[in-house]
Length: 371
Image (cartoon, rainbow, N blue to C red; front, side, top):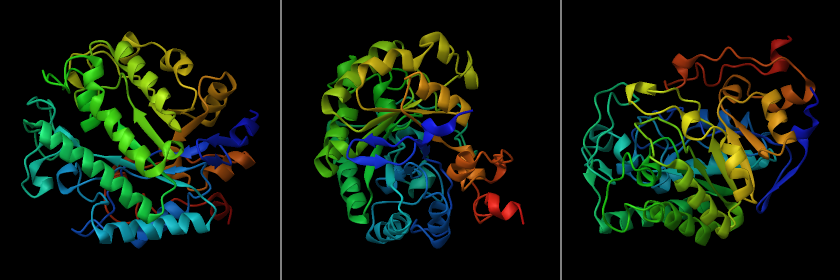
């Protein structure tokens, strides 16, 4: 396997990436205090992975109401901003690059995680089944008013301002996985009849308005988005994802943002017992369809290996890959790939969303394994 293409530098908007081995946003829930301020454990965790082409942080909530899981580090108080600044400064001191993934959980939250605040969403349609945290069933969300939508847009902008204050190199809008942007995009969760529902243009409106706010703060060359056009997580499906995402990507192309990260979902028919068609039945090949629509950097995500990343980049299907689990169990993933060392695939899924260093800071570097 010739891995040299993974180390071919890449210009992503205003940012120069030294390699194409990027770190995916990974929810880890390691904030151990109620103020949700990033801690020293997180500084070490991110710092060990600073050699990535660029790092995407775990998703950072824009407000108390936008939380989805316990232990998420926030970005809406001064203390949280300063906590993140320590992480960013450490990454920069090591020559790395780091973007904040910004989100709002919408109907995928629970009022108990929000100090009793009402759950918001585009329509009063709850997610079927149990909350991903395994806590309880989902709740029926309050259908947001136009004024509440505008409030959330301004919270997204303020969070981008906070990220800039913390020194981040850029921001990614979390538009995937059934959180609020995705909820407005897809018609399984958005059945509004006003200017934010109905047509693909209307359902894309919130997403594009938030992207505009991010551009106003960071400039187009430091803004990206993650999408999951055919993913089923959190009870999501669209009746015509090809039409919806063709329109959305064409609009993002006009804005000349730096990158689009595409979750290459492979969910089966009736995944999670939702009764939806399989991902590939809706769009068999996401990159074949979307690559011609976007001239910026296209990033592939979801269970890629170095070999499948090389294959896709060589064929021009995408430009880089975000690795998730491989970065969890291989803090030195970039060096391991560079040297052709064996990769550690013994990650422990039971420690992905727990507290403490187990499964977080105890995966050894390759050099430590040889001693």
